[in-house]
Length: 638
Image (cartoon, helix red, strand yellow):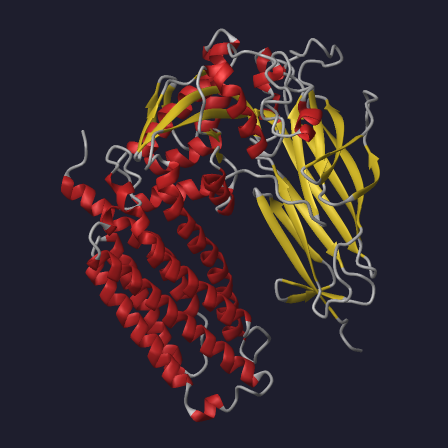
């Protein structure tokens, strides 16, 4: 049963305001908390924080007029804080060291609060006064009217984006240590939030331009949709065992049933279907025979994979496609967090158990490999339909989409170069990052022909030494763990299924492991290499690649070490030199962990996230792509 008109209107009222003010409220809190100097300004900023909370509450009640009033009050209080900071004694301190830094930071925080409130009122004015604006961004695929008005939001959101960019610049210009730790903390917190949200705002601008084109505003578009299973690792995440065709027509979406890729024709890769000669040379051995489709995503660069699928499609599925979309069980988990449990042909799927259900339990209910491959697609189709049609809060839906894209669980490619460029700009394309000094990316390819990566773990330990001449050396240790049992689990999980390699025993995990290291030079590779394959050197899209075959027995682990050098890692002639390390990885079914240490060159100090350190260190779980930056400074005197 479709939602009532009044209910749909409430959903539409909520969406843009929710997107804007869920973020704005956070920023206002960041601006006010911790400010303990100059009582009058502090009190005004505290009142502004309360107004932002009132605006957020009004949003939840779909009370746009109330949100507008609260934001107007927040702006008034921020202006009063600026007035309090504009008195002559306070202004006179600004040129002074430390004292002046405190004042300048306080003024910057107040100005940021005022401008953020003003940005909020721009959006509420739009929603209150522009016909049709409330229809946009509902993602209501059963009623495509929203698509007709989404482009109206582009310029207002662009104005907000420009404001946030200006605020970001002003906060960066007022960095430095002050006499007030509370002001420093408020300034730092706000700067971090604005930096993140400025990126989101720019992505929102691109989104308002992109959605109509991507979802068939001008003509129907058809997409190949693949379901990945990271229990058998491939370059973009996991083996794509099932597919469907999605039709997007003026915002309305329909799917064919998911089916196994097993019946699709083999040996389709040649010089006319490969995206490049380099790709053909590197992956021709993977994409032959039965490997044509089970290894279709051997490359970690999704645009290359998608272009290959698009080239194969006419011969393989009897039609051309306008793009490719892939998603994995982690994407299903994120969608189920939004929708709640969903009944499917393989049972009731719930967010806390879906990965285990889809990857571990459900395959045992099927008697042949073709049905097992289709099973992930069956689950994906049911959950995706529920996610797109269930009457859930639009902000929840949009946040879930953003999370899936951010972590590489949802990848999208368009055969239209202009649309693809916009997908790149919002990080939805799954493109392998540009090669650079400091880049570390680890990609595994399962050689077992089994779902044994369900039991696999991975840890990456990276230590980098910056040298006075601008170069850097690094050691990258990749430790692969294998928790697979040797009995009690079907052979399609723990093998051995690869008849071409009789050395594999039950429970063994064999991985073709590739390190992508940007512009690096390889100094040495140390691996157990118990099969005698050695290290292979190759390249892809400008990256140096070192590959080994790692054989890990049941309940064991193995470490391979790579020693690298980047000749031009940082600029010794720069008066304020920095160095970036970019950690990138393919999505894995079990979280990949890491530790990173960056050591300064002799004669220089180092700053990590605003704090002087002997060496910069980080650890935790790797997200899809994360950049870690250090600043190099003169050593402390004395």
